[in-house]
Image (cartoon, one colour):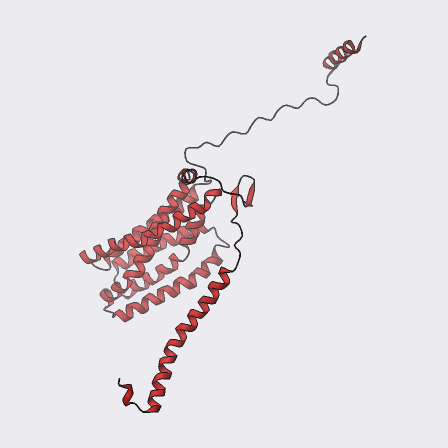
Length: 294
């Protein structure tokens, strides 16, 4: 549009519209900046770790990287947790990436409609995060993850065999199942690591690389078959997460692998109180008399 040919009233309206278009994003950036400053000026307390001296005590970590790695490797729950987190993030990215193509191929929707369906999925994820936070206050988190993992597998399989509006609804509901998985896997895998907790947390964060690997696998499969068939990939990923939840429920304690807990030391016998029985007391008295006799 040639602004030089516009009259002053139209020019003011155009400039006001442009100003309104950029005001919202800049206000949002300002709010985010204030939140970041508020977090940055807060002093972070020392991280409590599970130590033999008592739960919740902060201790100085002087262990080497090799010692931490051996500690993490000895914890089978942690090793499986990293694998489960890899496939959890993989399933999440796969579902949210290819739901747009699924909408286009199965119901003939436009790219805009696919984007709107994705936004609805994200809103379901947000709301269900708060709902599931309340649920795990009353039910064991791993049990909830087991149910949600199995439900996510079923929803992905349904989207495969029933492409259409109901399949789209099933993929939207997958976001409900995703809401609890990341924090639950994170907490279960880090339980009982003690001084290696921070180091172990880094490994769990690095497991998000699954979100970069498995979408390529699903994309190749979609090119070779169809969008609906390709959702076998997140179904298998959710299967791994479900298996991890089942493993955690069947493993009562997280002791290092190939390690037998030491047996309790025997309690020493107490010396008899008082003079004891007749013979023993008489012998003791005789010995004492001999020692003090001149």
